[in-house]
Image (tube, rainbow, N blue to C red; front, side):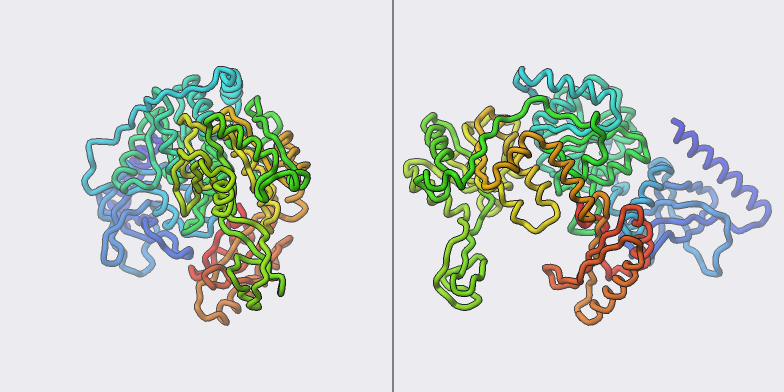
Length: 610
């Protein structure tokens, strides 16, 4: 109501100004417009003449001529300065009824600066535009499928819901989407008058979640809709005083400053970031700007605490589920010679045998799709064939086995059982007796709301993140261990983890928050996020010499910033030269001043390690 009143007042003031200027014989008003299109980062708003009878205000949707076509645009401001000696085009139409609010446009302007993008490009990616033929309106569908949990978990859900009702921000360690839905449903039932945004990392998560908010009618925006459907859903939600908008990061960008609460599901998931095209924004960061700008509550739910998330919550704002899964840790070095299989420990083999004997499925997590070999002649390590590509040697030793090798081993051990590999290349039958799965299964096939015959979870490659050179190894290990442990918890089945680092694994399972806190201290020592902010710049130039000169010059500029770290130039997978640099968070504005002056040949990701 207040925003509408302000818009009407602005329109009256504009009309009074126009009448006064007309009587005085002055020039007509000029509006600065952000065209809704991809523009180079150096391009800002364009000037257009305001026709008599038009009353554009900051945030209004307008139709404007641009070159040989007509586009939608957003008004930046209206001014009475004379034209700069050039002929200006005129605004075709003004639609104040679908304007975005002052604080919402300011939000996008700050975001564009933080991403080193033009405001027009960010608005173009974020906002749907009015369709040519609007329909009668967009309605939400009623969620009707029942949501149930074991009675033993009811008290934990109630405790969490009561805590959220008294807090403005909280992290909740949540086993899966099913438990997250129970928490959110309880919160909505306790506070039905709120306007709530629920963000999930993937479209599949949205599809699983939408029918379980029993009794509510969530609006859905995932980015898969047509422009018309997305616009009408956005407008219907904006015009409502309460309700639920459920979607992916696209729903966050369909802005509404009246949202009172944001739930970020699977808050550590990388899919929350748009990393393959501009604008390269990360919803996990944007939600915090949303909270700062609009004062919305923010609740993050995930299987394990992430160091970059944890820094934003104090001790009282970190909640656990209240009951933890039972995980058996097996030291593979101690059991190596006791097993009849080179790929399975004695403990795992016995448990698998008894589970199959009871008529239940075995879920075997194995995140290796290829077998790595070592040439004994030149010590080259790679996915080798019959001959070493480096020296042509044929004496080769197996270092690790792929999931197809594991499938053959299971068939040897259990010849009368069905074995299926499920990964990105093999979406196999999930009804088989033994499922050999990668993380893909958890992301693309596993349904926590559906009953299953899984009777045992065995994780054989839990140590894999520890052997990577990335800065997020501990974070990945935390997430990997806990998502499979919680899967076993949700099915009420045993979980076995095979490792050569049992002390680390025990700490991760028994003290996840302490591990995340220790990792945060390590990141401070090694200048990593969230205390340092890292950016990646790729220079799109086929001539390598020019790219070398351009990025070397940029490196020298960045090194003038206090505390800046610049890595040596390297090539990305497409052969383009790239630069990676980090600066203390307090110095980010100095780095953005450099970035925003660069042409679009420089492709910039200002959150490269998020």
